[in-house]
Image (cartoon, rainbow, N blue to C red; front, side):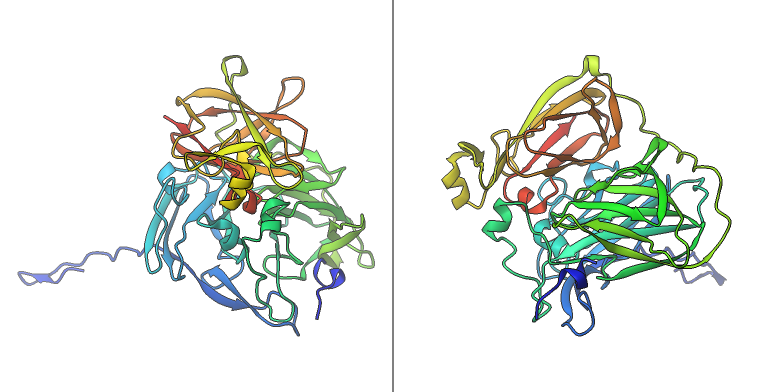
Amino acid sequence: MTFTRRAFCAGLGGVAGLALTRPALAAQPTLTARKATVQLAPEGYPTTEVWSYDGTLPGPLIRVPQGGRVTRQLVNALDVPTSVHWHGIRIDNAMDGVSGLTQDPVPPGGTFDYDFAVPDAGTYWYHAHKNSMEQVARGLSGVLIVDEATPPDVDRDEILMLGDWLLDPDTGAFVEPFANPMTMSHGGRTGNLVGVNGQYAYGLTAETGERLRLRLINSANARIFGLRLQGMAGWTVALDGMPLDEPEPLTTEIILAPAQRVDLIVDVTAAMDQPAALLMAMSDDSWQALVEVKITGGRTPRADPPAPLPANPNTALPDLTQARSLEIVMEGGAMAGMDSAVFEGETLDFRGLIERGQYWALSGRSGLSGTPFATLQRGEPVRIKLVNRTVFPHAMHLHGTHFRQIGPDGTLGPLRDTILSFPDEPLEIAFTADNPGKWLFHCHMLAHAATGMTTWIEVA
């Protein structure tokens, strides 16, 4: 049995005689990390044992209003330690969920109470951050939506969590080992089964003339999605949860790297006898439907383009004239390598690093060090040049804040929390260090992060 591209890419008691009662305190909602069995592959193929939140893939949708709070008690029913990172949220550092940096991992049978405010509306997600290369690949992720006080004028709001899974088609089990040297030293773990919202063949229904908000989330370990619309016309209105100043008409392919999100507002233009879909680029330069849209009727379309989403409160531009300049160099991997790097306080050559399971480095450091890459003062502007000396792209993610890419002419791009770096194409980002704590900066090709491409920045 083999997977085919066609099949898959596609209270108180009485006192002195007076009954006194106290309202019961609401228990904190739980989020249980546990094993579950799901039908990832189509009917006729075996089921798959996944690691999940509350038994579903993806985990339960968490939805709160802007300015509200997320409160969840993580219950670890797995037989390995774990933690939860809330990706893209400008969060209190103690709630960031990075095992070994911001909290101890939650042991099997243990709990941890997450309770934090959500200052920015947008599309976010949550996922495991202990051995995340394996735990996210096994299914430990879910969607977090922070709703605007004034939502956009659309007919429906649809969440599309894109992912892939590397499965044995004969057993339905995940292909092991996860720490495969080829995977770790090359592009990362890429699946042979592609799907949306935990389904290999996910579809929508819509009417001609409907206006939809599509929230796209790339939850894959390493896959970069190339996407475009069929039978729909639209605008990009937010990147990584952060609203654009003005909606941008979609005229080119959408590139969505691991951990990135994009919010689209689209008008359905296809008639009932015409195809409509979210298409995915294939390795042979063809396009295949990732999400098919079935047209069920028609309505009068809107005449005007969408208005911008309400701005979040973190739009102030960093002062580049006062910014400290830093540089982070990405090194290592197959076909490039590196002379040496420091791992656990010891300088090792490339062979020595490989023997210790380290294939990548950031500015001469491999793996998470006990000292930060840089210590910034609160309110300090900073610009970081990212230099990719490897032969692979890397989706670089900064926790706890958002940054802007500096253009060749010095202009600042839209806010993001994850940016795609290509080989030999230097790019520069800038932000103001306004959130105190220890903030991870790493590649979100999770095999790369697991084998060296991880550092952290301290904001004092």
